[in-house]
Length: 86
Image (cartoon, rainbow, N blue to C red; front, side, top):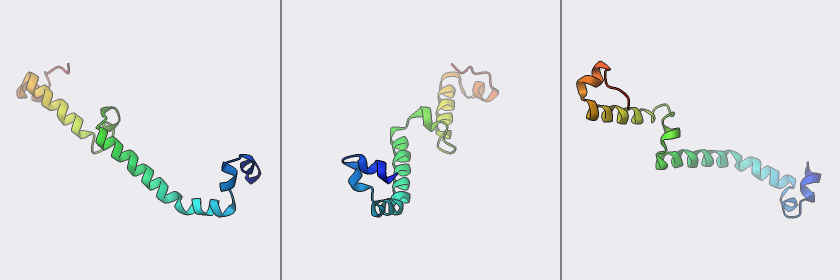
């Protein structure tokens, strides 16, 4: 693999054994940072498409939906299950 990577003009300079060892040392930190950044992006964006499927955080959208139904149809209709989900 080193042979082919060394043929790439710019990338070939950074493919020696020392660089692979450095990458192996920082790979767990990079993975943790990337995962944390992705979770933070979902939290800040509050994107309902993906966040509704998150285990604990997704309940927020169910509660918001229930509150909207109570406001539209009334508490009794929602508790009885007769309120339609418009």
